Image (cartoon, rainbow, N blue to C red; front, side, top):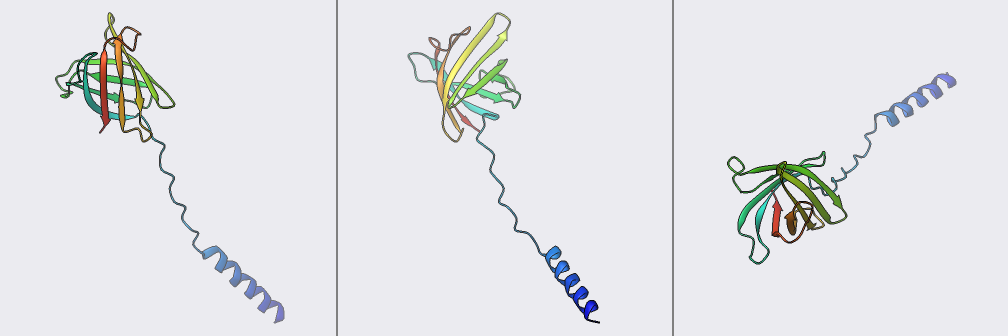
Length: 134
């Protein structure tokens, strides 16, 4: 009888430990990322940016640039981008012979970009631009 009581007590304690709920861990927020749709303005080097400009940064390192705010009617270009610290660079083509490159500084939350653009692989001498993540 003594062994039966000890066995029953062990079984009861084991069941209590198994049935206890574990504390849920708080989910870790995703690291800030370029991935997403961005919208802003661009302009020549001597004027404040006022022309529509947008970009779709994809998770595979490619980007689609729109030279207007209405993505259905805007000219579209395809390219690639790279992020190094708080600097974003990209090169994109409207056609094989029309290439542009950009360089920008992104804020720590990856919600605002501001930079310059140029022809070919040059990221300057074309103008300035900025975008906000939507």
